[in-house]
Length: 432
Image (tube, rainbow, N blue to C red; front, side, top):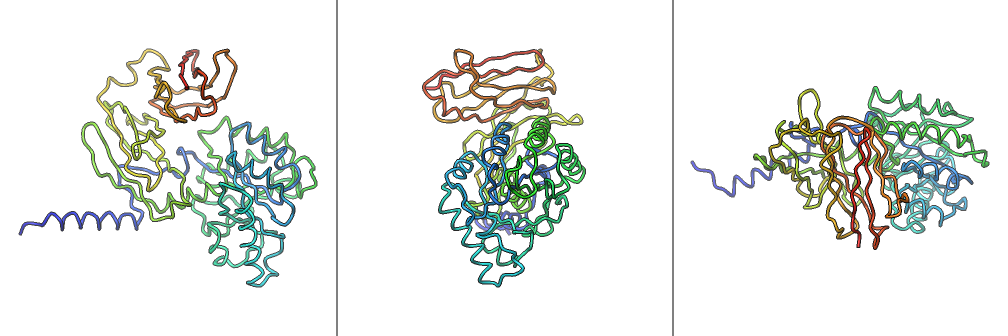
């Protein structure tokens, strides 16, 4: 008996829904344990809104382009304007309760007041920020179910490196730093993050004071700066993320499905989906897929918009690595046959910047590397003055695509400067 087309379509939709519910991944794809397929995630969290967290610690993180988390006690007179600036700059502002009580001494009503009151205060005073995570005062856990009704995760301090999927996301281990903890010097910090690489773990540092600002268990800013400089030089190994972003990535990674809906000679189409709340879970996941060796990727888009990608060669196989947003629409990889990367005579080639002139806030940078190497990418103005260092890191052999925000330089021509292995390339962008 011939199947009715409508029944066939309905069955396909049911199969896709089952795959989504079960978090099934098409065998051609791999989701990175951490962003950019790094070996470990590292989160730096600050408690108690001490005097120099925003004036000393934050600028050090900003200098390296890293983001951190401030767990604030809302009844302890936080500088809301300064925390608003931190949030606008991409740092997380989250809750450490209203009055810093020991949750073991509170009843259900009192716990709720601390949990809900602090969350409401932060959301009322910090625009563009969702207060989604909580740090227990004194690391004393309350009622997990009650906390989970208001937050996506809670931090404690068992002193261990967390696994890539914590056993209890409402009681995440952290490591106390400073004079009262086991991590005091830059060497201690660096040893601890290196320890996590063998297990693909998640290191959550718990910090308070800095440079003797009156806060509990202070660290020295020189140690923090030395350690973050090491992290900056090893971004291929470590993903530095806010506590909240790491939690989001974990939950998305563990609950997402990949279904390939089309695959022909020139185009691959797939969907990355899950059943999580998209108003909260909005972190792109890093994905990898094998592609034909004679294929040259010409574009990668999601829902019609360009997204970052790299084309890499590993063990005589060719892969595309990209960042895609779950539930963000079809991802389309477009390619064509090529002569291969080895046909190019320079380390850096095929540099393009589009649209040019720019048509909005974002432009796309594409380039091709013949071999792995350390590369710097900068933006300068027409007088040669540095406007921004985009990246200074090691890039793998292959094709790369990055999205650049050029909105701050509207009305002036700017120049993109890239350097690798003595090869210098410059591209002018008209930015009306």
